[in-house]
Image (cartoon, rainbow, N blue to C red):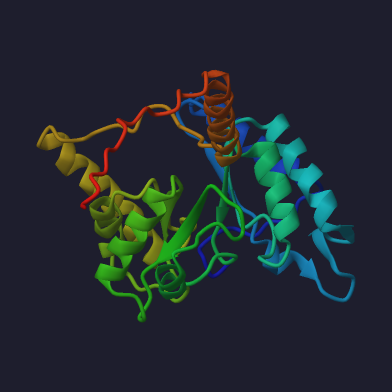
Length: 268
C-alpha cells in the first residue's frame, strides 16, 4: 500500500487494472464513462530510470519519452473513459508535454501536478503554460495562504485551464480540504486511495457535504465534460485575424482628404 492510501499490486500489463475496474463497475451496475470516469495519476517522475534515461512502465520494460506519448494515446483510445492524465511526464520533457497535449487535449485533460510550479511561483510569474497542459494540481501547504489559493485559482480559470485541489503527503485526519475545494469551485479534488484513515475521512466529508446540499436544494451538477484545446482556439483566432486582414485588403483605398484652400492675407 502506498503512502497515499492506494493499493500497489503488480500487474503484467498496463491494461489489466483498467479491465479490472471495468469488471467491478459492470458487476455493480455502473456504466463506466457515464456514471463515473477514470483519471490516472501517472507520477512519471517516479517511473524514470535515470541510469537509462527512460521510463520504466513495467518491471524491465522501458520507454523513451517519445514512446510514452504513443503509449498514452493508445491507452486513451482503448479506454475512452479516461478523462485525465496527471503528470504523464517529468517537467523536463516539455516537447513530449506539447505532443501529448496536441494529440489528446480535445478529449482528455493533461494535468501537471508535481511537474507544475509552486503556487508562489505561479502567482509571481503569472505563467501557467509550461509545461503545456489542460490544468494544474494546487495544494494547500504551510507556505500557501487562503488568499494565495483564491488568487491562483482565479489565475488558472482566467487562462481557460482547470484547477485540481490535491491532498499533500503526510496528511492528517482533518477534512477541511473538501470544504476548501467546494469554496474555491475547483473542477476536481484529488484525495488518494481509500485504505488509510486520513483519506477516508475526506471521502466521508464529501458525502456529508453532498447530503447537506441536497437537503438545502442547492446541489448542482457540472453536466458534460468540456475539453478546451488551446491549439484549436489559437488557430481559430489566427484565422479570424487573417480574415480581417483579407477583408481590409479588399476595401477600396479611402479618397484623399480635400481641405479648403487656405487664404493668407499679406500685410502691406
